[in-house]
Image (cartoon, one colour):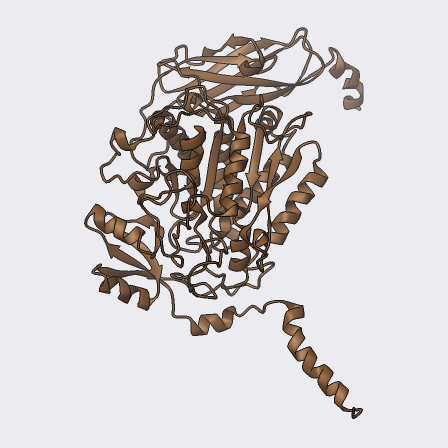
Length: 588
């Protein structure tokens, strides 16, 4: 070999290997130049048949609608094909150009799948007494030796005792499961789950209601239900791919990279084994609502159903008309984006009368609707069944949780339709400025109600709970004041529940009612319980209380006999005379 030949060959080899060593390049700038610009189109619908034809036809129908139209994402070619199908199509708005923010991770700061996995490990390392990570299955890519393999991870958060966080539904701790990012392109949902996890572990011991929840409940979180799809979305960098589905590549000649109207995979939120294959699904493999070859065909969905079966007792009969008992326990929320909605079961029923007639409502509609409106009191979202606010969708995870197990299941659609904080790819800053603050209270309420969602959501909501003094000498009196509102329902939606007068309130000193605590009656501050909004007070003697911090619980009852969820406050008792002992030091 000529001595100069080797360097040339090495250089050539380096040119070939460099892209492999560095990983995929962020080609978002090239894509922005070559892809047709995306827009949102208003597609006119004049009958239930039009809605079914559109939602089952493989179009990228968004989670929003108008009085006589649905919204479809696409380019001018999509609009032309819709018109050729006989639809009336008008432009709603052009989508903004790709983010020009220099990414911290990708698209201005959103954390990658790897970072979410590391976050769970870090939480367990920092809080081994509160957190445990569960590997509940494998993604399609891992099962099928695909290019993007992932484990499916959940974290269980509770003050850990022996036997807690076991995959067994027979537990004395009610369970609340929050799931995010089953649709990969809905970036903000995983970030809200991240903040929920951090709020629970970081504020345990200082926030009284967080402390009460972790002492008595198990709070489970799945930050990324579709990690394969999320990896694909994040490969777009500052112009994320609109990958919605998992990465099952076994069927179809779909677009690669994925487009807004053609992509590989199965829509995991149309693949559940309850009411699979009905309205709002597609049998076309490249469609964004492709339901899969059979019910629960995808390993992600099979694993999710297995996890929920291990967390929640089966509390509902097999018939569609069977009602879960009023004492049923367990709640589940699936986070999606966007449109600022709280959706309750049923999602699969095709309803065009408002509200849905009784035969198209879930058997526990009263409790489900009340809980949904209680949550929307905190986040301000519109509330109702999917086809009351959007369109029917079959094979969804929230319908599965309720329909199969009787657990109260819901969907949040986070974020507005447009603006800086709108759409699938809102500015990262919106997570902390808007999405987390507006949903924090709603998630806390849901976690409280998980003890008995169909019963406690009917009762008054505790708005605030305070004590006259936070640190007190043993034997001295303390006053607890709590405000309750039975009219704490969101103002927008379908069939808003009616409020009742608050007619009683209680405080518990030595443990809550479900742990054997003894109630002490509270009095109406204004002299009578005679309105939906009341403030209740009680004077408590600390005589005989042990030194240390005590957790006080309150609740209120409405005129029809429904007790609401708990409120709580801390009181710290110190030995009698402790203030006098330290007074000379203070006076110096």
